[in-house]
Length: 209
Image (cartoon, rainbow, N blue to C red; front, side, top):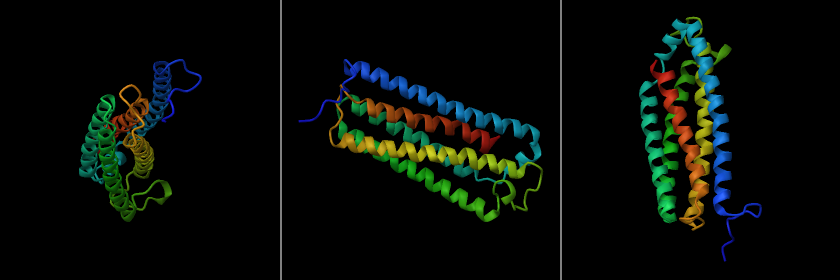
C-alpha cells in the first residue's frame, strides 16, 4: 500500500501544495536577486570599460549561445508538457518528457564544455590568468571573469535542475504522482523554467550586445 503524500502537519493536500509553492517562489526570488546583482555588475563594468568588453565579446562563439538558447527553450516546452501529463495522471508520459528535458540539458552542457575548452586554449581566462593576445584592451580580463562567473553559475543551476527533473521523472515512472497530487512535478518544472529564464537574459547580455 502506497503511503499518503500528506505530511502530518498539514490538514489537506491543498494546503500542503500552497505551502510548497510559496516556499519555491520565495527561493526563486532569491535566485533572481542573485543573478540580477551579477547582471548589474556586468553592466557597470561594461560602462567603465566599453572598448575592452566590446572587443572581448566579439571573440566568443555566438552560434553556440544561440544553439543553447534553442535547446533550453525546447527543454522548457518538454517540461511544461510533462507537467500537463502529470495533471492528467499520466506518470509514464511525464517521465519520458522529463527524460527528454534532461537529455537537452546534457546537450546544453556539452556545447558549454566545447566553448569553455576553446577559451582555455586561447588563454581567455579570468584575471591574472588572461593571456589572450588578440584583445589587450583594459577590461578584457574582467570581461572573462564575469563571463565565467555568470555562465558557470548558470551551468551549476542547469546541473541542479536536470538532477531534480531526473529524480522526479523516475518517481513519476514508478507511479508516485496522480492527477490530485503532483506538486513535486510542478516545483521541479518551476525551477527549470527559472534556469531557462536566466539564460534568456544571459544570451543577449553577454553574447549579443
